[in-house]
Length: 337
Image 1 (cartoon, rainbow, N blue to C red):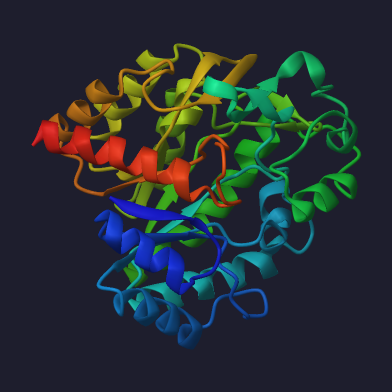
Image 2 (cartoon, one colour):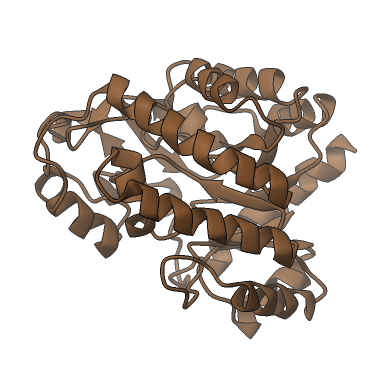
């Protein structure tokens, strides 16, 4: 178990994780000072700060979207962004940080609400495609909240005016992955691709290509490398067509290949075009079956909680809700051993 989904370290959160019995840490879009790339000295300082609490820095997930949005969209300037990303990956390897998680969504995670009513009055996020104009470029600001992230909102509002087709997005991904995979191989860093969230065909005029198991197989074959892997976000996969069965298909296929770098363990109720997040144990998946299947297929990476409901008296990061999720997962892991 790891603790994560924050962008900077603080003593309270690290102590909290240690007290809960997790052994690892993952930061999401860490706040580091580099100019377009993460510098070696800053990465080493981050790693040592984690280790002082008896924890391991397992992975870093996401660079600022503005650092590689041109690479995702295939725009002028993408080569410069890719060069800086290559340096980040080299520096991660030198620092001994083994995994970089990334996504290929130029307009981020979308939800149509962050305050849908959940169990006992908790707030959960939800998505309803009927409330969005998916083919209208720059439509996010008026129709959906993109991850609650101001950077993402600005990128959407200044984004392309034309439709970005699925074929073009695949061309962009192939160009991108073939440029960074050799660097990841040389550096000993595993790249972990996150599914599109929500996994629909298009949002904001931009096609979303990572919305099925088959799309991940295609990407894996493009990369053709041991350095290519996936961030198995159970919630994103659960919201795809097939729901819980799709999550099992991902694990059964990619698990034995050693391609699952780590797992985001959350769940949703419903599938596209409409779903809502929920507490573990009340969604599409039988979480105990997911843990057992991970074990049976040889998964040996780390698991962390992901999005959690906003419950009574909680902090913005969600200490109470995350404590519940982490304990829930720890109990299921113990039962599977």
